[in-house]
Image 1 (tube, rainbow, N blue to C red):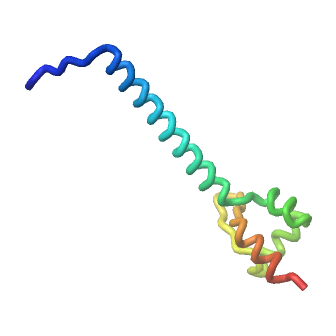
Image 2 (cartoon, helix red, strand yellow):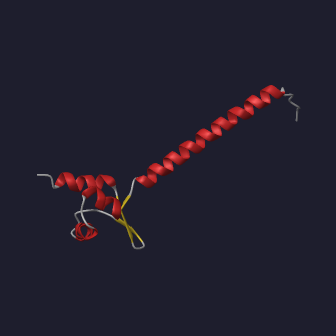
Image 3 (tube, rainbow, N blue to C red):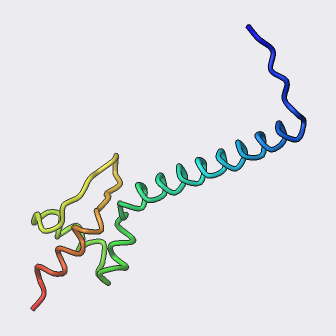
Length: 91
């Protein structure tokens, strides 16, 4: 195995560039995770968006008008499903 001599300035420059890349990767990862989590709305957000009560949203679920996912006792909705419900019932 050979020895490589690196100037201190070059090493500092390389470390700086690695730091910048690391920050960019972290930023992209955080941004992607936030988008993925924001891809779902909870019941309160749907109620505020549609200006209806929790009971109305429950009725939409029961009638199959609004698709949902359930984790434990919490319900989640995709924004495009909420938008489709509004557009489908537009007169």
